[in-house]
Image (cartoon, rainbow, N blue to C red; front, side, top):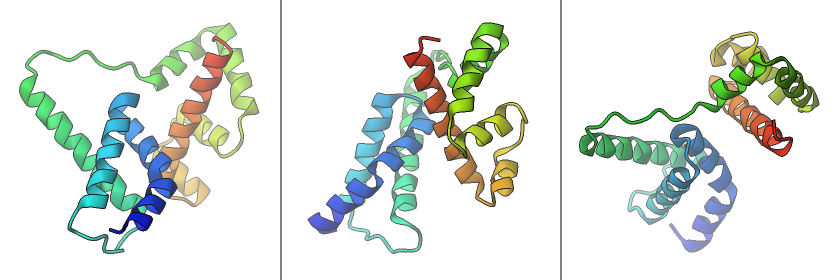
Length: 164
């Protein structure tokens, strides 16, 4: 891959790929490392991009494979039970139980733009699957997952800003 094509690919896809890897890894440092490795492999590989899918999808599949390989390697070397990472979704849901916090979160949700607000509400309050949410919007299941993830990140960000 020539330098100009590689730079353009990096500029266009980096944040999308990083966001995707964040959903897998749940850790910013690990996500950054995997994203960088994915772009390195995509740019330096002898196998050229065949154009059978979007370049974003191609790099995401490389990143997913790197993530899976890392997890397999760490599982081999770790005999101890690893502590579960806190799930931001469950954290938000547990805060919804507290009445005062609930109202603050609903205000944040009320001020959010669509489709983030509606996707989040359908998932959390409506308990719909991503496939069902995607079909409501006439989009894919993956679109619903990404939109929900972005909505969650926006809520968490605004909660941190407001110290909720």
